[in-house]
Image 1 (tube, helix red, strand yellow):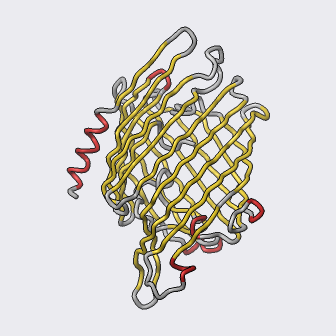
Image 2 (cartoon, helix red, strand yellow):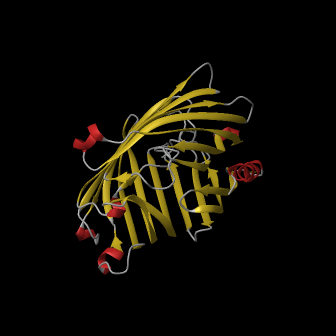
Image 3 (spheres, rainbow, N blue to C red):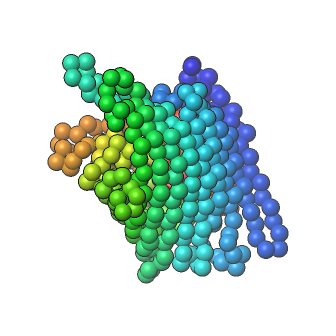
Length: 357
């Protein structure tokens, strides 16, 4: 498909984004919704929609961030579909933070495989999956939060490989259930669109057979976001450093993939391994009352073990985006980013800013 046509379709959907506010004597509810039309090298042309409602759990609570409920659904020309719903709650003067999400999908994707003699090539696969997750955080002291996480997931993956291979290689059915803990130090001035401050989050999840998981392995995630205001709140430098590490008997489904916010510009799934590291920066400029632009650039790598870091591939990614502040009081933006990576590119829709959590 002509990329200029894709951009025009995307921009038309952005222009027709929708917002609404309801006010009564108790609380206010804001709604943000946007149709999504996208194009990816891996899944083709996709269409869908996402929407969120934003509200305060208690009208008397002026300290807690805004809570939200959201849904997302999409379908692509290669028969990929995905649907999910999520709930974020902040209450008791931000002493408690709870997030719940659930979804299902049929994903037709690909990964890169080095094949002797032939060389590297993409291998297609189909994954049908269902998942649910719960995260509960409690303020411990000052801006430090601690909490627990639980994930339940079930998937069946069929690989596009020759039929003469053993069935256990062609098809993989797997449960990946986990329990974990997290710590989050949060000095940001806003959850959805910070103008200043920083947050550091560490997560450690345990996948165990006694949780009815197929494999015994662990995942570690460390994220550091920092926001620097320039001349005013209209000009912000946002930086992000992430490390995603899986250790133990790591299955294919437990590997980390370069892409999305870490790092934009990679949509075809070529770079994946047990460990992914990324660093990036984004310039945000709101030049009009509600309109803004962003520019971003970063580097990432994917390796099996930390000892491979010296020979790790350097993966640059960067691009630009547009923003429209749909609900100014809550700083809620909708936006579109276009980014290019090493031999790859992607389009990204969002409600809320990048570097979210």
